[in-house]
Image (cartoon, rainbow, N blue to C red; front, top):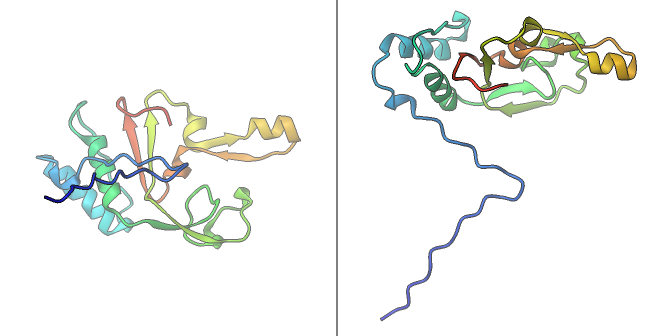
Amino acid sequence: MSAVEPMAKIHPLPGRVAARQPFPFSAIVGQEAMKRAMVLTAVDPAIGGVLVFGDRGTGKSTAVRALAALLPEIEAVEGCPVNSPRLEFCPEWAGVTGGQIIRKPTPVVDLPLGVTEDRVVGALDIERALTRGEKAFEPGLLARANRGYLAIGRECGGA
């Protein structure tokens, strides 16, 4: 009789948090028109996007996160607040220099109900203005969602 070795335990790397796996896009039942529209925008970003709306609990946010998880990482300029693929597309107000290209997941940004306009489109960076005396623009949630998805609704957590 041979001794059975105990199973090896798998530990996450120190300092890294395991990412939560989204619900599989292929497991979403129904909502065929929504799924088709979302897949079309993923295949051809020139379409410009799709507005998905419906009653609470119909799987809108779940579908967005599931599809985003299937997409390849995007290439973006490191530090660019609008996820520009090349340095020349990064806005001047961002003050990005160097232009190193990094790979990052397709962004999914939550836009909670009742969010203020300045949080959506951006506004003057008050902290920088008061502490350093500099005028600087603080980009909003739309900038963070550029080249990705903006999820709007009650089920969204604070972003």
